Length: 199
Length: 199
Ligand SMILES: [Zn+2]
Ligand SMILES: [Zn+2]
Image (spheres, rainbow over the protein chains, first blue to last red):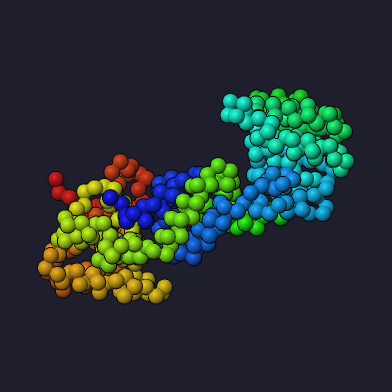
C-alpha cells in the first residue's frame, strides 16, 4: 500500500521523466500537491499541448509547433548561406547559447545507425540536399558528435554535399578551453594534435 | 530566442519542478518530444486529474482523492488504538516503508509557526482531539521532526493529549543505525545520551 490510486499514479508518471528516481518523484508530487497546484496545472497543460501540437520545422527539422522555427522564419537567418548540421535540437540550443553562429541549422534527429533502421531517409537527407542545391547555400558545417556514429554520419553527408557547390567543413575537436591536458582522454588529445594550428 | 513558444513553455514549466534546473528541464522536454509522447500524455493526465481531484483524508489528513485514505479505510488499521502524528504525507510513506507500525496516522501538514500564520487550526488539532476523545484511541506517538518547530509542536500536542486518557510518547532521537559517532552532530549525540537505555 502507498497512497490512493491517483497519487500513486502521479508519482509513477513523474518517475518516467529522465533522471527522476522514486524519491524525487515523490518529493515532486508532494510539493505540487501541497503548495503548487497552479504550477502542476500549468505543467499539465504545457505537456498536453506540446505532446500533441509540437512537430518539426519544415526547413530544419527542429522542434516547433509552427511551420517554420523562429530561426528559419527570421529574415536574417532563414536564408543564410551557411548551414550547420547537428544531431539534435539540444545541439541547436548549445550552439545558440554561444551566440556566435549566425547561419541556419539542419537537425538530423539522430545519426546513421543501420542496425536501428536509421538511414538517410530517417535523417531527412533528401531535404538537406534540396537546401544544398539552392543558390543561397554556400557553406556546410558538420557539427555531429565526435563519436563513431557522428563521424560516419558527417562523412556520409560530406559525400553528398560534394556534388553541390558548397564549402564543407567539420567542427574542430580538441582540448576544451579551461580544460587541463592531464584530464583529457587520449582520443581527444590525438585529435587536438592532428588539428593543430600554425602560430 | 530559444525554440517556439510552446516548447519554451514546456521547458519553463518543467523547471518549476523541485530539483529541476534549466539543463534537466531541457533534457526532459526533448526526451518526451523525441521518443516518449505517450509518457508525456500520461503525465499530463495524471497531473491534471490529481491537481484538481486530490484532497485530504477526512480522518488523517494525508493526500487522497477519496473520503478516507487506504490506511484509514482499512478495517485493521482504521480503528487502531495508536495514532502516530507526523508533519507530512512523506513522513507517512517513510514510516510505512519500515513496515513495523500498525496503527493509524494523523498528518499535521506542517508544524506550528505563528509568524507564518500556522496555528492549531491549520494543523487540524480539533480533529485530532476528536480522535483522542474516542474510546478506541489509547496511545499517541509524536513523530514530528527533531527541529525547534517540530519539538514545540510535539509539546503543544502533548499538552492537549494529556486532557484525554491516552499514553503519550515522542519517538527517540539519536545516532542512526549504521551511522558513525564521529559524523553525528553534537545535538543528536546529546539526545542519544539523554535517551540512553539500561542494558
Ligand atoms: Zn527551422
Ligand atoms: Zn487517512
